[in-house]
Length: 178
Image (cartoon, rainbow, N blue to C red; front, side, top):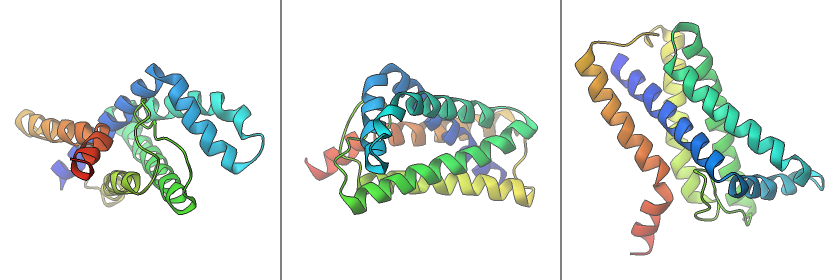
């Protein structure tokens, strides 16, 4: 169980850090995505897009870093990761149900319309976050790291999960539109 929790920890940290850097590099695309989502909430939603984008980038970066940190920091990281991934999953479900015309710039560049494929992508991330929370609650999620070979294997697995998540839209397009 320790190794599964470590894979989840490293994968979520990787996904959140890659997402934060990508959003920062393509700030206007990320702002446009949030603008589209916030306009669905109310008429003044567009005024919140820029500060919301900054806050989202900061939250993703800080959560990713917290997951890589020691002790209590990791516990805070797990809670923040669960809240973020739950929010991302709910947004994808709402966009799917309401058929919102919002391009997903989740990893900086606008790819596909936010919809069912993003629910499929985000639900396992939420599962990883819940696994980590359960590990902390059950006492099976150590705050440190196991021996070096196990860490290396977990890190490689987490890197694959991060890459597949970051390029999920591209992979889905290859499968859906060969």
